[in-house]
Length: 124
Image (cartoon, rainbow, N blue to C red):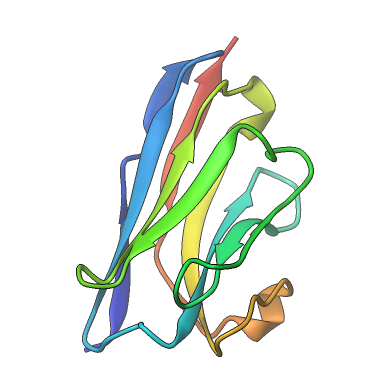
C-alpha cells in the first residue's frame, strides 16, 4: 500500500530546532515533487517548502525562508525538513505530500498523496 509517514514533530522552545522526516512506502518517489505543508487551527493548509525530484529546485514560503531547509534522499525514499530559529507562529500540524512531476508544484490541489501529519508546537 502506498503511503507516507511523517515523524520528528514535538514541543520546542522558541529559537529551537526540529527536524521532520517523511518516509514513503509502496513505490519509489524519485519522479515526484515532495512538499511540506502545515495547518494551524482555524487556518488554511499552506505550502511551507517543496523540493523537486533531484533536489535541484526548492521552494519556501516567505515566512520560513532562511530558517527552514528541505532536502531529500531518494535512496531512502525520504524527505526532510530542518526547522531552525523556530517561532510560536510555526505551531501547526505538518504534513508531507507528493506531486507527480519533475518540477515544483505550489498549489495543494496539485498534491495527491498525503501523510497523516505530525504536530509541531513552539512555546514562547
